[in-house]
Image (cartoon, rainbow, N blue to C red; front, side, top):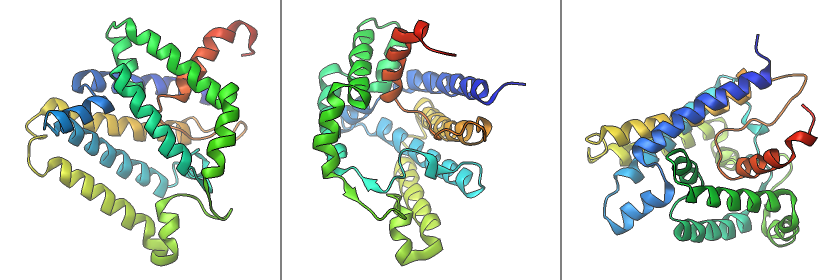
Length: 255
């Protein structure tokens, strides 16, 4: 029988494979979607992204509702809203995407497709992420970004349903999930253009499902009561930094 860590690893390979195929087939890239929408007046890929968000949202919240995933153990539901990091980080990431021509996920897809230039982007992005998490620029992040965060009471988290619970009570989560998911799916499917593009439609469904599966894999399948860990799903910045660190220090680390 596989250990929880081995099972999580296998699930990660599966989710990554599905995501890679979907990303390659539908050219699933944040920058490309925005370029198509704003410069080419073609919103199909952006709608594929919206459909993926709707599927991931509904599936993940269903997992949480049935007690299969404890989302409070993720890094996203903290008692602090990082406004400064979101604004400054989003601005810098947007400029980086424009200069490179793709996003973090798109970089991995390009590497899988044989683009050797993307390896340079991967290395720079990975080292930069590692430095911001636990290196030299981490001091700047803590000193400049953290003070701009909006602090909430310790008993609260930044989840929208939690913030609205004082008004809507126990109906906050189903209300927020239903409104957001219906709005995203309706906008994605309303004009029928996405439905007429099966490749993009299936890519959106696959990406959303892979995201939800990632939460399920770390929150339930790979959960180890004797070695609890954060639940997580597919991300494309911090793991690149950890990969660079793993490659550089493998021989000096313990199994």
